[in-house]
Image (cartoon, rainbow, N blue to C red; front, side, top):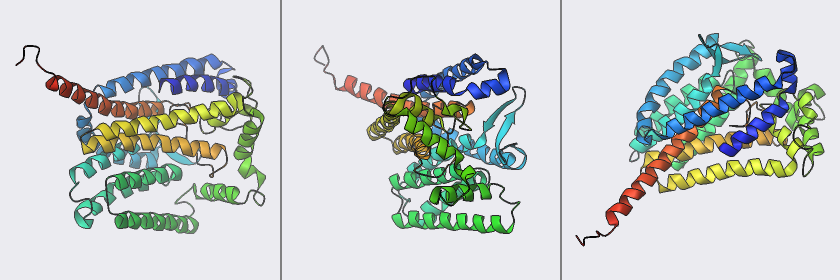
Length: 376
């Protein structure tokens, strides 16, 4: 996490030039210190979260889920509109915006881990184990979907993976997949029949069409992907060196959605592989922590959160190298952000809480098993 924070500081400072010219007369130091402050606060929040015993997050999960649902609804109705999507709420007094979906994602993963742990004997039962899980999943994903299809889809996949790890019946998971596909089809039909219902539908469709057949679609629709590929091609193996990016002047969001393109342009394939390795290492270490945890809730919590972060990172990288359509997903802990970085740090702090509990239990067992120096 510290290495990702250092990479974030370097990359954001390098890619923020056009934004600084537009809003702060070219003062890039403003964004450097602002982003550095956010990262330091995030690491502090991560430390604070790891000091709380992970079992308390079972209770926090319920409160967080119950709070996130009305917040998502308020955001959908009266949230701050950016790019024809209501994804943000503005916090009064400090005038800071945050994506309510960040809270909802973490809350749903924690709640699902708690449910799977409590209902471990009933997870294969359709009525007692499977149906109660559907309500929060469809409610949260459904409220996120109108403004942010990619986030809703990623969260839905995370829930499927967590249910699989929680040993939910494969038949029931397959039924849930079919239900998700049906719901997505219903959204498409409704959006075409009533255009005002889903304002972002045309954007979703155009991105998929641009990815599927780039030669037959208007070049403006593939603008981001084209410049991302130019950044990759010109970066080569070793890159242009820090601060030498040219595509940062052309990419719409080089400091967030396409920051991995700046990695590949300035640090080359070597830098890109290092960032990829850090995320894979985060997933590997989290799986190790989950395997050592004696409690089902702790195991599911650690692996569920880690998969959520790493899966989002993989999607962001896949978009950059044109493996999947443009989604608008940021690179966790690396892209510029405020509350998104704080939620990421808080999530990793929960994983560290599980790890700290494992270490404490191992230490106590070691002390118990040690022979007495007095022979007693």
